Length: 306
Image 1: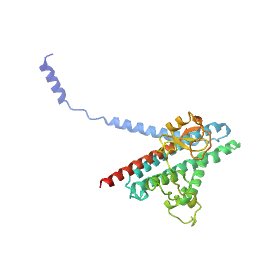
Image 2: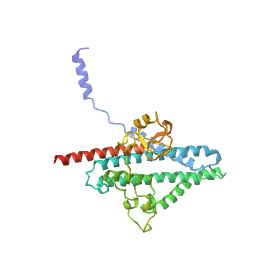
Image 3: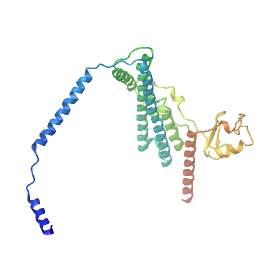
Image 4: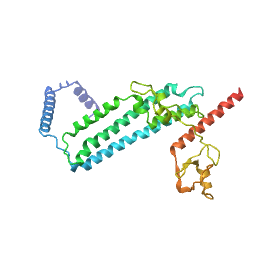
């Protein structure tokens, strides 16, 4: 077939009117959607005819698995809290020496985020407490639990209502992450001074005593991060599980090859490689101490240049 004939056929085809969409297709789609909706209603009606089945001791294994999954999820909060504490420490190290760290807006936001994390972590613990005491223990005692979802909802909300009614000091004054937040940040600001108490960071509310016992308990203490062997800030510190003294890793490993007495002044404990363990918290604090020392050295050099 010649090219001219093909071109003429294509031109005639392009001039043909395009058929309008068949309205019946829309009707078919509408009927299909109606059928699906009706089928869903029938399924829901069928489910409603079957009452909740009781949970008994045969489901104890499944309940243990659920509890384990919740624990795994709750443990993620610890990792997030550690990351937040690291961020706060680095921010404190980066602030100018004259800036009060707890008045810095970014630090204030970090503290608020920390409190939210603590609230969420506690909510997870209350979920676990509800499952354990309102479901698992009764089942283990031979009771059959009907409508466990309602029991969990009511039990959890009751516990959360009690928690929400507490003041900030009642919620957080014993919090180890908040204590670490305060002490870590303060060490970057005034390492030679004890850190403020937790209660100085939390406003007093109605229901809080005038003088809390925590005021004396929570105050931070200063710490020297120098290895007794090198007299320098710790490098990858290892801590003795026998006496609690810490040392730079390379220095103490070399020391114990020929000595077994703890090199800390006044300590007579016997040590060996077997009793030396990593201390990740101390590692982080030692790194922060190095950053502070470097910053102070830089500031001193600038003052001399001026």
